[in-house]
Length: 206
Image (cartoon, rainbow, N blue to C red; front, side, top):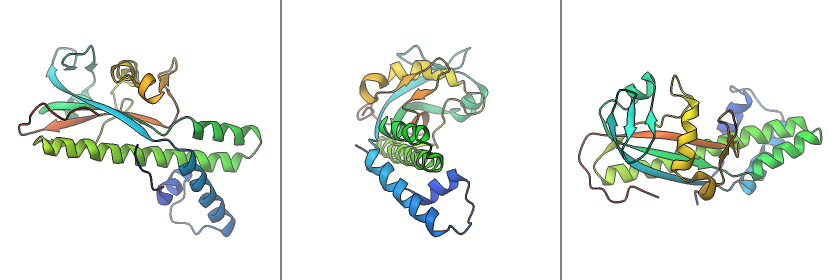
């Protein structure tokens, strides 16, 4: 289980605040939403590290049917020896709470909780990413900031391969809709490049 602290500053950023002074009512409502979000969040993640090879179509993950396509991901992984594929979620309970507030007409509260949830899943992804970085260092690799499907020309429908590859439905409860959007909505998938150096093959799965 990933331990979350709750990033108030990030939640405000997702709400569109840029240093404005908050009134007492907004401060109180945000604090309540942060508390609720932390109580509802069930952060979990899964990853696996693969050897990669360049093909005519893109970068192939050896031992899988997944090829990473697009110029952006090609540049990002240029020179990488391996890459980690990760998925993280904070669970479905926050989604349900947001929908509940929307249906009851508490739109401001729904919006605020949704932004809190976005901040929480990014915090969860950062912390899980840090575990992968540590794993890489132990195996004498260095990493770069994660790169997610949908960034640049890295196709969003890459998720169709990532979700079953990591067994996300069983392990994390993540499913895709026809537009390749995830449920729970506050979920993240990403690729992390492993560069330079030599490492053993142990410790590359969690």
